[in-house]
Every structure is written in structure tokens, then in C-alpha cells.
Amino acid sequence: MAEEKHYDVVVIGAGPGGLTTAMYASRANLSVVMLDRGIYGGNLNNTATIENYTGFKSVKGPDLAKDMYEGATQFGAEYAYGTVTKVEDQGATKKITTDMGDTYIAKAVVIATGSGQRHLDVPGEDEFAGRGVSYCAVCDGAFFKGLNLAVVGGGDSAVEEGLYLTQLAKKVTVLVRGDHLRAQPMLQDEAAQNDKLEFVYNTSVTEITGDDVKVRGVKTHNNQTGEDGEMPVDGIFIYVGSYPMTAPFANLGILDDQGWVKTDNEMKTSIPGIFAIGDVRETPLRQIATAVGDGAIAGQQVYKYISSLN
Image (cartoon, rainbow, N blue to C red; front, side):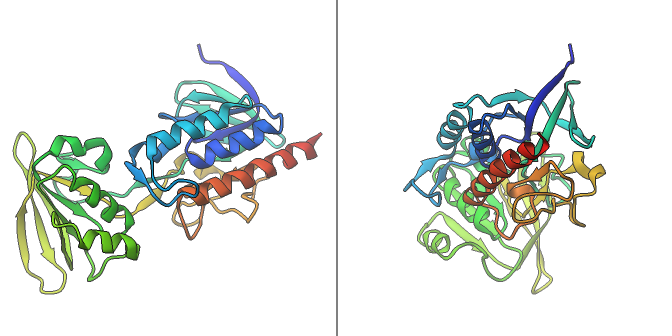
């Protein structure tokens, strides 16, 4: 049965930032629950190898997620499953409602819901989702062993996931809308040395084609020459940016025009007692390290805020 539960702090999201906030807040002897619609760790679980997080030369995403979770819960923070559908400001307390019908009453809320992968919004994308269209190489790459794949995008994620897929696929072609990559130079150097990775520039995907079973190809448009073409592929992995997961907070008036949560340097929103951290925030950099840093600040600021209520 649905019930009402009371905590000092509700952290919405259990990615690196949310886990860090939970650790800091619970270590300050606050009662804390993390709410998430999936397994703790967030996008860490979709990342094969991480090489840019301090303290590790190289670490598997799921392993880092497990370590962070154990650290977050060692001082009593709890974890609960559920998708938050609404947050209401009730002054000294906040009411959080989930799709499970449960409600949580908290003195402070920390929004750590992160961001999602943008879609191309072209014909065939929805039709072939799960049948050759993917947004997670770690999740789905094993289904494409020895096959020809396309990756769409020109940033870090596209190049990183393209490199990962070369361990499984026969060939990986990265389709870049512009005339150059936006990925870090080190990633570009690594990609240039991989014989199974090819880059095609000034190219947009206009349609994903296939049959009753799976993806068979993509239709393309050259943004420079105007020429249309078609490329046979067995799967397509899409990395064209992200969007904020902030729909449940639209009623609070704390979002910017693009839907990112606006905060100050102390992770505070315009509503006392509501904080936001990590990828969901209006920020110039979205990385594990920045999410963890945000989480540490929020954990401390939440303690100060709740102490001020007493």
C-alpha cells in the first residue's frame, strides 16, 4: 500500500552526484533517502571504461557505481525505487510524489535526475528502437558482433562509444554533422589510430531504414554538397546531445528556457530547501567529477539549511 514517509532529505536521483550528496548528508546525521527509477549509479552503468576520474587510471562504470553506492549508504542513507512525478513546496517541508503512489515529506530536496539522450527525430528511429537503433553501446554492443555499425555524433560520447564498438563490430562509421570533431584531442588521436573506425563529415542522417526484422541502412544528406545518399548498416548508435530530466519540476519555476535547473554556486535554487546538482543543472561542464563536486557542496548546504530551521 502507498504510504507517507518522512525524511530530513530526499535526493531525487542516485547517480554520482546524488550518491555523493547522500553520503555527505547522512554523515551529518540527517535521515536521507535516494529515489531513482533504476539501479543506483545512473549512466555509470552504461559506460564501459572511465579514464578521466581522479584516483583511477581506468575503471569500469558499473564497478565505480557499486563503490559509490557502498560509500553513500555506509552512514545510513537509504535507497528506494520510484519515478518522481511531482514536487510541491510546502514552506518548511516539501512533498514528493512517485509513480508508485508513495509520498515523501522532507525538509530539503536535492534534484539529481541528470539528463537523457536526444533523439534524431527522423523516420525509422522510433520504429527500429530495440531492433538496431540504440543510445547505449555498452548495453547493446554485444548484439552486433562482426557487423557494420554507424555512430551519429561528433563529441566525446560519440567517439568514446565508437571506439568501444570497434571491439565488437566489423566496422564502425561515425557520421558527423559538421566538418570537424568536438571530442577531446586525446580521444581524436586514439580514434585516428583505430583501423576499424571511419569518420564521414558534413553528413546528417535523414532516415533509418530496415525490414520487418531490423535496421538495414541509413539515408544521409551531405550538408556541404547537398547530395543525398544511403549507407548499409546493421545498427545505429546515436549520440547527439542531451536534455534535462526535469519534467516533474516544471511547476516550481526553477527552470531556464531550455529546462535546466538554475542554481547558485551553493547548488541552491530560488526556493529555499530545494537544491540541484550535476547534469540536470545549468552548468558549463557535465562530467562525473563535476557531479561529485556538486554533490559534496549540496550535502553540506543541506545540513546548514536544515540546521537553520531548528
